[in-house]
Length: 140
Image (tube, rainbow, N blue to C red; front, side, top):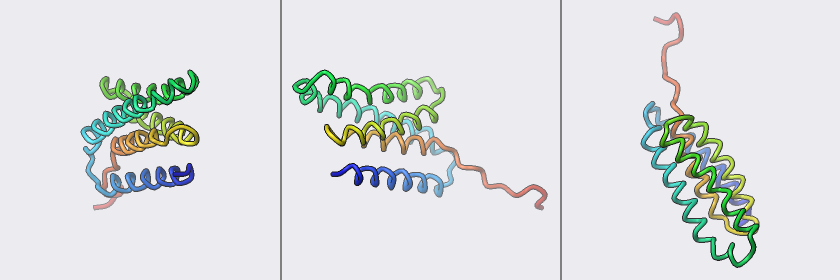
């Protein structure tokens, strides 16, 4: 799979998830759905790193360092979820960082770091509360 195809898939899934959560219209969708997606993304990141370790150990220490980078945002998301502080902001920033890093790693090592980024993107979208539909000011 080429980088262009991966990028297109990522953009399409982010737009589809945003449309789904926007059209659903329930103001309390963020907490359980986002939490599950954040933990799944963390598990996927750890699993992908462990699966790619034999390749990294046989290649060089630089590849090992490249594999360790996605673990940092994944761990920060889990810590922010556990503490309950800046969850949406941390999740969105981690999703963007992991998406960029996943596309970078897909060019020469493994494309599988893109999938945790997609989960984090969906978790960030799930934590957005839709605006309440109200009457315009002065309407009776």
